[in-house]
Image (cartoon, rainbow, N blue to C red; front, side):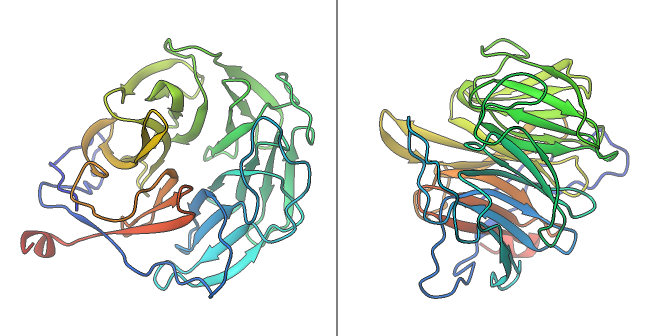
Length: 330
């Protein structure tokens, strides 16, 4: 469960999602996958305009270092789930990817994904037809036409987009709507504007760029032109893996992961109002008594339900927002 103190945004008439009585609960028996279905690491998760949940998963593929696999995953890697029942509505993405990672859905319901071992970014239409592909397959680099293990994509309202690149390059790259290289910023380090694995990226209502700077345990915020604005430091908790906005793009949700040496401690879900002012968190640190998890990605639907992909247990979890009446009766 989660109790959240009231937080006000600076945007006039923006919806305040949380007050002191707000609580979340884990939805049991969600999703409802077919018996024997092999769900691999759910590395990317998103929601479309119909409020269907898209999951980018690795099927039978395991993350292996330092020698990456070189074969294409032959089974579907993209699932479409009904948000209410959790049943599979569609699946595709077979014979396309080596190591799935990030997934985003833009305002036109196009599906954007990154493959870290292909070093590529892909844009598909809602039904899975390829619209754009950037990067050279299996060839890493740090120039305008190459990536090095890219992690995620964030798409602006005008169709231009940002790529967090990534495990190898520690930079953010911006492209036009047609895929033309525009500019980039960042290098490996822990100073403002530097990164140590920019793992997830998203945009607020003003087009500011939010980056989950994973190994630096922080969220950095930049202007649309890449100028550093502020940061939120999570050094007392865990490494920040992913972040996402609600439908107003004013309220932020993020996930972390903690380890004690080599022993997993689990993940928390964090809720912020505008300006990355943390309101509260739940998961391993709260009264939630579900399984130990390693949340890799997160998204919120228009009912403020939160969905996370757990790559430790290879599961997808849904947390439902309770009404004030439900919360006060607990």
